[in-house]
Length: 273
Image (cartoon, rainbow, N blue to C red; front, side, top):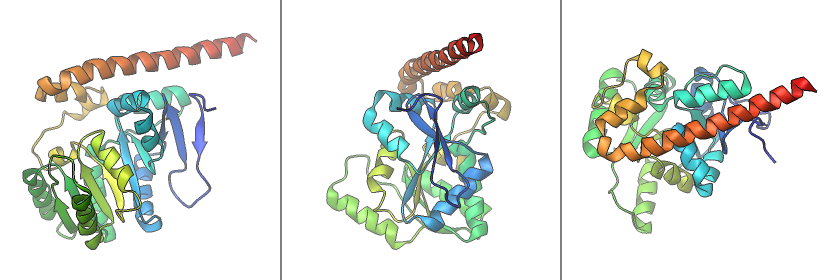
């Protein structure tokens, strides 16, 4: 049985990321920011279909509460430590520095690398307005980027026929990366359900489309370093997010404190022996 200090070593393969570490019930990939960038492109070259999750506090708590969601998160090819609290908890538990690898930071870097490496990208989810803004900025900033296509699906449950048609549409464009913005946990479930069907590396990027397109501002870096982005999101959407942040953040603080206290007590007992 895994403990909270277990480290999972993946098989010895020529890939930048080989380690996942357990936080609460979730397995989160460990490595530098550049390791994550390189591994994602390694996936495009070595796996026909894969998916990447960006694990923030909300996702860890959702995974802790929901076993089925926990399973799909742990089966992700990569689960990045998206939030500052997540990367900091990894450092406290495992004693090694861990970069924060947020979707909002990784998306522009991946698009730049895709342009440099001759890879193609597809944008899926959000709204037509947001997608058009994303594509407009990408074309302006990265004229060499190969944009395979983009599509905003209906905001309702799709029929099997509609879903199959979307899969065929994406695969016909042969993208290397598919950026998926459907919101958590919907986008993670969509990627897990479509692994083996969508022939690309899928990335659940959530609100990153909005910030990349310039439709939503980010806090200054000093505020992000203090893990204050949730306060800004709450300011933007108080009616929708107040309950999530009140419950989710409180739950995370309780569970993280419990883990750290257990580690402290265990360390003290070992020292006394």
